[in-house]
Length: 131
Image (cartoon, rainbow, N blue to C red; front, side, top):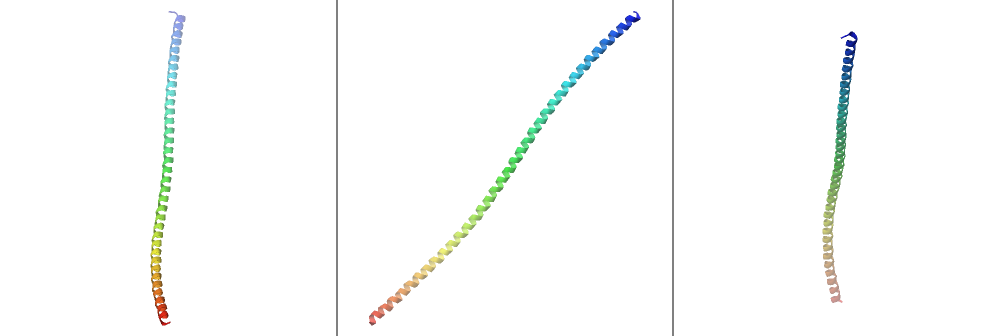
């Protein structure tokens, strides 16, 4: 082979090698890009899942706080009802005591009036007999 022919075959081999190297580099780049897109998709899904999870946790916390508020209000109303029941019971006892006192006073008054009427009859009878 001549020197010119050797240069041509070296140039040809070099071009073939460079082309194959370019193809492999392009394939690696394409594979890298695909892996990067896949990784980005996975990260996007993970981010979306975490966002949904955080929203759910927030909603549960809000519902829990609302439930606690409702429970507190129910307890306050229950305590107020118990207080009112106590006041009502005390008023009933006071009413019963006043009613008993009124009955006793009425009986005493009635008994006193009956005794007073007897005395008036006796006086009237004596006066009528003496007249």
